[in-house]
Amino acid sequence: MGREFHSSRREFCGASCLSALAVAATRFASLLGVAFEMFPSTSSATTASAQSAAAASNDSDEQRVADLVTGNHILFDQGVVDGFGHISVRSAKNPAHYWMASSVAPALVTKDDIIEFDENNEALDARGRPIHGERFIHGEIYRVRSDVVSVVHSHSSAVIPFGVTNVPLQPVIHTAGFLPAATPVFEIRSVAGDDNHILVNTSQFGTGLAKVLGKSPVVLMRGHGDAVVAPSVRKAVYRAIYTQLNAQIQAEALQLGQGKVAYLNSMEAANVDTINEGGGVERSWQIWAARARANLAAVNGSGK
Image 1 (cartoon, rainbow, N blue to C red):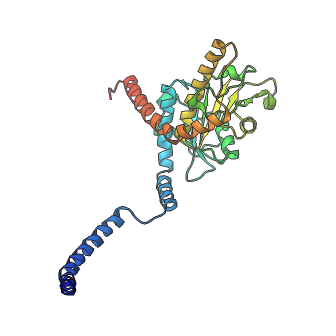
Image 2: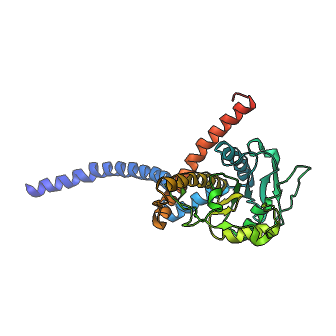
Image 3: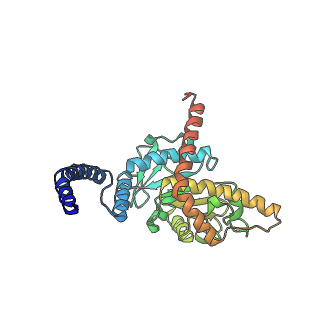
């Protein structure tokens, strides 16, 4: 009886179960196909490579110039520059060249003001537009720092005291973790002599500045301001803004603490900078750009 039961069960499974299994297998194969479409079989390295390629495809001269125009407006709106000061960006198509606005107030820069400069700091198509005498700050830094994509020069009043005293500019706030333990100071007398006009308006002076900058992201210019560098326009703007804010807070802390200040150590600075410049730059850029657009529209009376 037991053998008959098992025999009939095998026959039943052979007819009905196999059919059911076939249907189930078909459905599973269909679902599996959808899954493969949704989640391609690629390694994390391949995925990361694809994402990098996609990001790189968006990095064109057109995008860099658009950011350059916006960067000018943000720097003015944030009080880093006024009628003076400038920002540039290296050309994506020809890395020996760079883009920079003509000599107009940063708040008023438009795409039509942007000029391409060659490796000798000569304008390729000025078309009568005035050019910055201190373009050599930018060109000579690009010449020796292949990692730099953007340069900002400002006359930040908060930064200047650290270039004319023996108190080094150091990272004291977490958003300025990019600052070195002691920000280098360029003394133009070292290349121009005592009888100079402070401005870095020759290739020789620009070369001297770039040498003092070294591998630092910021160099102070005695009695003149600073130059900030970064691997993108957005990061250069971020660093210029927080260099100024750090200088303001450090000066207040020095006064309040009677010279005793707890600075970020090298590990803290590196760790927090990785976080901030990983996602914080983009978040800050969006709100800065929106505010600059709104304020510029109000100034122009467009109401938009």
